[in-house]
Image (tube, rainbow, N blue to C red; front, side, top):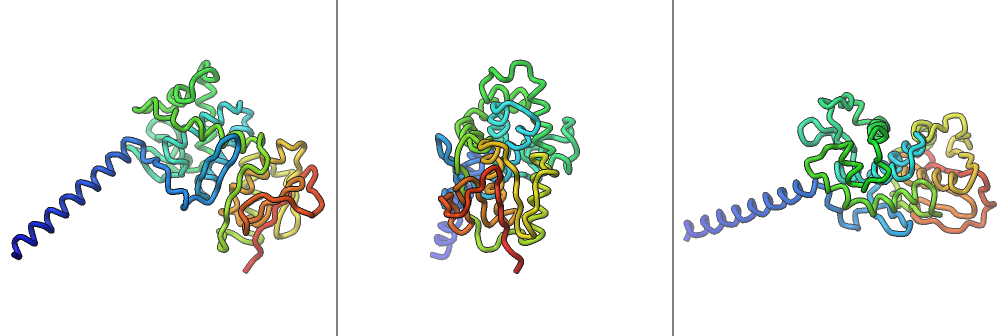
Length: 286
């Protein structure tokens, strides 16, 4: 009886191990970028389509888009960059990967992309990707997957195309074509608060958008970003919401719409419309 029990247990262990190996193989074949259950997502993007991301993915997507716009790249380039990062890292700033691959785009130091520390900087990585894409002759007329492959030279050249639709939705929102399109829920314990949060937002706006001289302080608990037109306003508003969790953003207002961390959605406000500017408030200290 004891021998039979041990045999059954051993057989069960083998079955479990086979199942685990099978799951691992599947993950490897799809690039490890399977979508997580929607319950774990804290951000939704609605712009002629719907995308759900967690806070880290949303922040990385917003930075990739902002760097592309700052470098005056066409919107198509933002789509290609987002699709590439989707496939390579799941829009996560990975510490490692295949061989010596690092970061959002899984760029390799041994292939001249930079040091591991440099590549782990999302802004540096995005700039290097856009610079490489710009050198590809005729990339504007290529399919997303073909343009990405010219830069990445992946063993799975068709893999980028499956992220084209999601990347187009994100691009429409993050470049400012949609109103109130990025909505994130922030818990009661943001990463930063008060002065530290405001300082981080100033730094992020400077690095992502080049707005160091135009982001005006609105006291120690927020800031105001001038917006010359509605499209630019929604670019900055969506960027602020995308970075709400890591920068302690509590409220964002543009025009007569307001996003709050408590509700996680955009709603009309009875306050005086924020015309020509985006107003952000951060969580207070303590």
